[in-house]
Length: 327
Ligand code: ADP
Ligand code: MG
Image 1: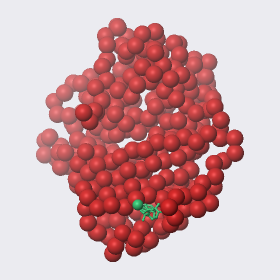
Image 2: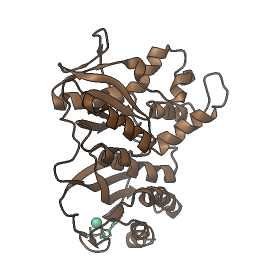
Image 3: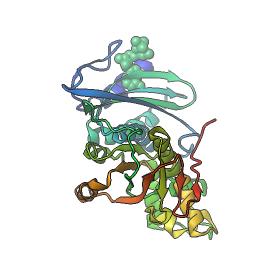
């Protein structure tokens, strides 16, 4: 199967599963032709995933397909955008059609869930890497950003933190707990969440007009919150004990013989959670609570925005977000 047959057999089929609005011309020409929705702004983002760096080599084709699109959709969620279109640049080591099929099936699941449409890309040969460029839309002037947090705002996080840390730990430890026993069901759930993160798109869109700033947690809660604080030129006081942790982290067995606080800090410094961290004024507390009920996702208040530049605990001790850095 050559490059064009691969595109035809797999990527064109994948494109037909989306319902992205405004696609005048999709895959097959030199460029796609797209009409943006009226009265909206386009929101664009790109993320590259490299085998061995962004996902362990043992990850299935399906999960790689799912996760590479999910992390890009998560960026749209953080901006409060609705997904429209994406392009896919894929570098494949060989013509393993079974792998490509699995990859496309993983991606198709999210395409069907969100309606985003594949409109083009590039297919090359080399070490496995996947680069996706997503486009979404927001009503003019309503995008959520990192720079709007104000002193006095509450700081919230969606869902629970630690699936990413626990899932990765499970992969690295070959699915065995330190005492040699197999993992419980909730740990397998963490692994599933690590491989197939759910982008919080509905929540992001619902936060327009409520949140003053927003970010998705890809590098770790503390590191990502620090990005918001730097962009907004403020600090935050965090109640570390109030950060909701996944059952897997609470069980503590994943990180060996560590205290609850150490586990908590590890989870808050690990990436791959893809929850949203956002700030909102105190007078929006009722709206946030109503949202949590409506969205069927927990939204937890974990601190407040204060003057300063860093994250501190109640007593003033500084919490440094290490996060993951490539260089
Ligand atoms: P060009 O030589 O003009 O770059 P290509 O031969 O690379 O064109 O691609 C032909 C068509 O197939 C283009 O419309 C391109 O967007 C699309 N395409 C190529 N690879 C992919 C892919 N991995 N996913 C989606 N569309 C792709
Ligand atoms: Mg090309």
